[in-house]
Image (tube, rainbow, N blue to C red):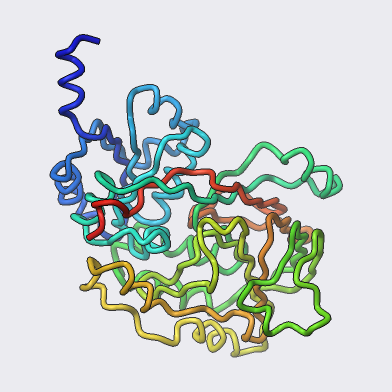
Length: 372
């Protein structure tokens, strides 16, 4: 490389590739987001719609070889989840421009929702290694312990936020429908929630845990003789939903947070909604969201303020709702395979084996001189 070429490269900003979705909640702000990135000093090499990548094999290594330094998911949790499946294992960093409706992954990482601040984070922030969840097909004809030893390949995919079986899959089918989103806009999620609560399906669920433990905030509530940690354990239930959570904040503007959980805690949070009596489901779920949403006009304020405003989800105190933590979990639903979602996208079915991948993905987060 000549001196002129070296000087020209030094003048360029960080080489970025942007992945976006026209269906994201704030997709209209994409041009503004791209301008904010360029103003912050990033060089946008290419902007791709997520639809161009859905049927392709993982592109992270190829992008890395092309000189891309950061791949920016410009959208919500679904766009981030799909982008992660191209990056995981390549060493290429993920960046986030939060253009979604809920932006739960961005909130879990304290990434500002104001576009200028998010762009500054990508340009001058720091890199943080976060945990990911990975989902694999589970062979019910073989012993669970055998597949644990093998690593159970091939995988359905990775997730940063959440894997769900049951109620929320139906919710995702409605909430991600393009026609529904155009019709109801910001009311899409409440409308989808009302629809799934009308006729919830009860599933026979069998859960097998590896490294089961009780959440730290629940220890005080356990009986003195109840074990805090169990290497292998099993639970059978009739359930509305099983949720495996990696990113601890959910609920969009409500910012419900799992106490003591983070994207670096090296465990997955498992929440089981058991079958409730007639008429009780809505009341139980409503108890999660018993606080008004945060004022989204203040999205650019300091992270510490947002942290103070988050509402803790004390799951263990609600009848019919169980909260565990584990390194891995197998989920079976009897003779009827059920679809599963990873970060809101339907990608496979039960039985499924889910495990934590420790500090697996580099992500651009606030730090250094990038704090708003």
